[in-house]
Image 1: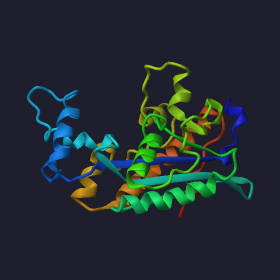
Image 2: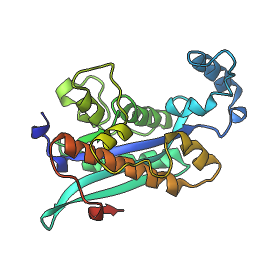
Image 3: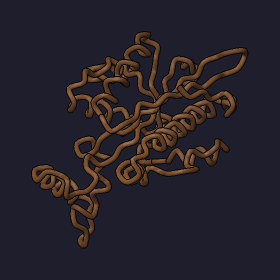
Image 4: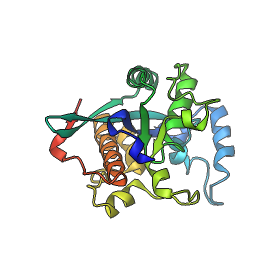
Amino acid sequence: MLDNVKVDDIMFLDIETVPQEATFDNVNSDMQLLWEKKSAYFRQEDESPADVYGRAGIYAEFGKIVCISVGVISARGGKRIFRVKSFAGDNEKVLLEDFGQMLNHFARDVHKNICGHNAKEFDFPYIARRMLIHGVKLPPILDVAGKKPWEVKFLDTMDMWKFGDYKHYTSLNLLTTIFNIPSPKDDIDGSQVAAVFYEENDVERIARYCEKDVLATAQLFLRLKGEALINEDDVEHA
C-alpha cells in the first residue's frame, strides 16, 4: 500500500486547539449548559463543568483552532527537503480561509493526499467542522461526504501502525521514541497549549511546537515506508 504513495504527493499537517474562551465564566449561558451536558460523560463526581473546561478544546463544538502547520517533502540537489509553514493566530476564520486556499492549490492534482497522526479521528474532521461553523467553503479534499473509500485522500500514521487493530491507540511521542526519531515534545505539549495561548499570548511558540509535530509525523511516515529520515539541516520554515 505505502509503496504506491509518493512522499512528494503528501501534505503532512497538525493542528493545535484551545477552548473557545479563556475560562468557563466567559462562556455564554447557553453554551455553559451544553458543556455541562457534554462533560457529564467524563466528569468525576467531585468535578464541576468549570473544573473540566480545559478539555473543551478537543471538541470542535466547544473549542477552536489556533494553529495549523503543514509540511511537504520535495527533492533538491539530490536530497530531500522538508518545507513547513504555519497558519496561526487568534482570528480562526481568517486562519481557516488562508489554510483552505493553500489546500485547494495543493490538492488540485487528484493524486495528492493529506496525512497526520490520529488525523482521521481528530485533525481532519475538526478542521472541516470549524470551517462549516465559520461559513468557510470546504476544500474538495476535506469534503468526503458520499465519497467511496478509495476516493478519500486521507493518510494516518496511527492507522498504519494499528495494522487493523481498532482498539489500539499509540501516541506520536511513543512512536518517535521507539523509532529513534527526535522528539517533538522538547518544549511544551498539547495540555499546555491553552495556557500558552491565553496566558502568555505566544502564538509563535505554539506554531513552533506544531511544526515539530508535523516534521515528526513526516519522519514517522518515512520510517513506516522503510526510507531514510530527513536531516534537520534540510528543514525549511516559510
